[in-house]
Structures are given as C-alpha cells and as structure tokens.
Image (cartoon, rainbow, N blue to C red; front, top):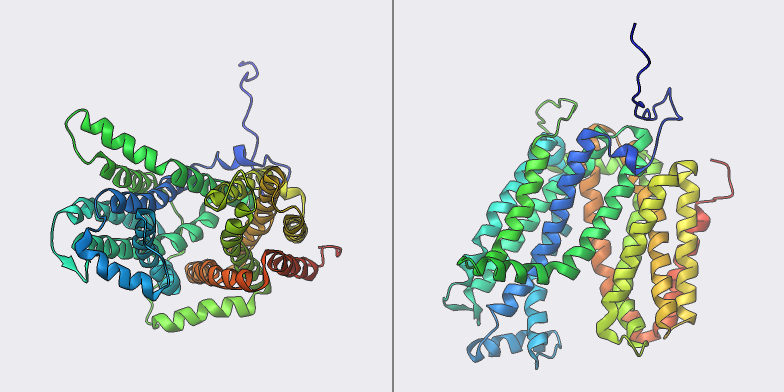
Length: 459
C-alpha cells in the first residue's frame, strides 16, 4: 500500500465550477499555449521598436545628405515650415518619412487585415507575418549601397521607406490575429490577468526598445566587427522576428472551422461594424480605448511643454515624462493582474478615469516641479492601465469568435487614428490657448467619461 504523496499539487485554475482557483500572473503563465503566445509577443514587440531605432540609426550613420541633395530637402522643409539648419533637424525630417510610411498602413488597412484574420488560420497568419518580416529586413544592407539620387534624396532612403511600408502591412495582419488568439488559449477567468501581462510587456518593450535600441545596435556592430563580420546591427531584427515565429509555430489552437466565404471584404467589414452596434459592452469598451489613446497622444505634445517648464529637464527631456507614464502603466497592469478580479470592470474603469482626471488637474497646478511631474505622470499611467485592460478584456469576451479578427482590425484602425489626429490638435490648442486650459479640457473629458460609467450603481 503506497503512502500519501509528498508532492504538493499545483493550485487549480479557476473555472465556472471552481471559482476559487488560483489567479494572477503566476497562474496564467502556467497555460502552455498562452506562454508560447506571450513569448512570441515579447520578441515581436521588441522587433517593432528596434525597427524604428534601426531606421534612424541607418539614416544617421549612412544616409545623411551631401550638399547635392540638400536643396530638395530644403524645399520640403520650407513647405512644412521646418528649420533644417542642424544635423539633428535633417535626421528628424528624414525620420519623419519613415514614421509616415509606418503609419499609413496602420490607419488604412486595419479593417481589411482583420477580415483576412477571420478567414485564415490565426497561427499561420502570425507565424507567416513574423517570418516574412524577418526576411524583409534582410534587404536593409542593400539600400546602403551607393547609387543615384531620386528626387534629391539617396535611392537607399526610398528603399527604406518602401521596406517600412511593407513591414507595416505585415504587422496589420499580425495584430488582429494575435489579439483574437488570446481568448482561444486563455479561459475567461484569466483574461484580465492575460491582458494585464500583455499591457505590461508592451510598455516594457517600448521602454527597452527605445531606450536601449541604439546601444544594442552599436554593441552588435562592434562585437561582430571584432571577429571580422561587418554589419552586425542587421542581425537584431531578423533574430527577434525569427524567434517570435519559432515560438508561435508550436502553438496549438482549437479554432472554429469557418467555411470559405463568398462575401466581399466590404460586406464582412460591415458585419464587424454591426458587432459594435448590436453589443453595447463592446461598443463602450471601444469608445474607452479610443478616448484613452487620444488622450495619450495629446500627452506626447503636452510632455514637451511640461518638460520645457522644468529647468533641470528642458524640452529635449520630454522622453523621461513619457517613460514614467509607461512605467506607471506597467505597474498598473501588474496590479490588475493580481487583484483586478476582485472588482467590477465598471469600477476599475471609473477609477482609472477619475485618476486621470485628477492627475491632469494637478499637472496644470504643479508645472515646473520635476519630482511632482514625474510622480503624476507615473500615476496617470496607472490610471490608463485601469481603463485599457478592462476594455480590452471586455472586447475579447463579448465579441463572437467568428467576428474577432474584424473587430480587432477595426480597433487597430481607430486607435491608430486616435494616436495621430490629437498630435496636431493638441499642438494647435496649446499654441492658441496655453498649456493649462488644454490640461483642464482633457481632465473634463476624462471626468465626463467617468461619470457616464455610473460607478455608484451595483453591477
């Protein structure tokens, strides 16, 4: 007769019949398929951030214009009223072209890519998009070869613009497939924790990618040059995209088999829009995400103004404020993963909106103080996490499986628009009315959204 087992069984995961099972990050990471998906997200997110850094690095190191091309560039700068009297300003103008090429597919193709994400097997879409991006960036060294000027700019610069455009198109197929896969590999009781981990990872990748991207590229260049291999910086992106594809290729999904569609893409986009019309919870969550990302985009401009008022920082130090906001979002995401299941989503959202309201009001009053400004930016980031994560979880739970790709494609479209238009509007409003009134305006909008949630009602 065998004795009792000396091993402690793993805590059971919560289910409908066992609501008291373990929760939090440590429990959701026990899910093998989610862990593979998450590792794929880490490498894919890092690659996306490193990509932008690499493009600026190549422009700075290899594609700076000679006097032969400066006239055409000066004409462009004059048309948009930008001074290019310094090297930094020239790099900024050339990098803007990269940003535009990266943004156009994100704003134009999200819904179309979402339709195909519903039609095709999601694992294959994610693996193929990462593998193709890995192959695409291998062409980057070719664009550094000497050649003719096109429209007054080196031909290689236009090659990087085209490569960036194609890379962004592939990203539009990856994003809705990835988002629609989360509810397939994570039980409903774990979705809040899973989305919290995704949010924290995204913020971490942003900070690591932008803060450490250039030192890592330079380190790879010098490390491989020491053993006689030139161009080591070009290995970083294929490695990241390739590792993402390898992690995702072992994913096992149980997708609903969908018969071949005879409907047009536009009619299927219309079906995705109908979800917003027919499911109020999805519509409300989408509105929260669009409003939140609009506010965060406006803060990109306002951070310049806030940093300029701090003597020890100056306008060029605005990145420290944005990094602190990102750190706050990551901290908030971890807190939600561990404790969020104890609260209703409505109250989490209202608390987040209220937090954003008061931090914006306090930022308008405590301008010029480095310590207070950094602290308030971190708290604002925590409030943003309280809004973003419940909204994303609600969309995943309440959207029918067969419609998820389309809905997430629409979400990506709306968020990219929300990240673009406020940049222009905030700058115009600050120039005309000043920083404080704009902060009060944004605080008022956040407060209105919090009141609409009616957090005092029982859920």
